[in-house]
Image 1: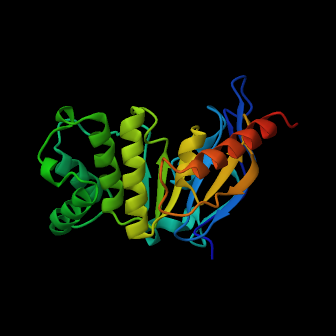
Image 2: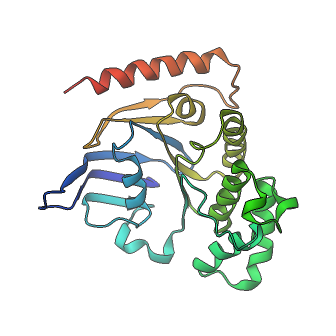
Length: 255
């Protein structure tokens, strides 16, 4: 059974109005449990809309979406989905630890579980020594690590990530990509990661889904046959990325 199964997904915003926008059309893909898949596409192609639908933040779509075999409307408390946004979306009046506790509270975890869960995930992302710092005392990379810790604290079966490193400098982003792969290796989470950075997608993914411009649809499903762990110095990463870029631009020019 697939962890995620999307069949002929479509989404239209403001249907029937002068502001109608067709965001997605006939999007179909699936993911196995424990797989790391990246969606790569240009800005505005509907990548984030797919994640929002999977997270239950967008409704009124066409097609079928199953998470661990359950239709979205039936998921409820039977499945936990973590979401890391492009911005950290931390509450500035709370400490790092308290931001993680807030996520646990929203998901209904009992207060007695909060200390152990927050300590475990902050250790995992390398922020154990910053548990009592406030947001303004953190770098951009540390804020995103806090956001990742908050998402992981609920022990999600599926982790959705929407361009989480796009606002960071490349040195910080490289470090966090490596850290994310380490977390994925240890936890075996199913990760669906959205990006418009082809190198990032190539470096991270088992598979790469290429999307067209709006209305977004998937035109290529590429397997990234590179050994793990991966290195930024490995010329094979650059070679595969070059092929991905060529395939991407070819698909953009197809009708």
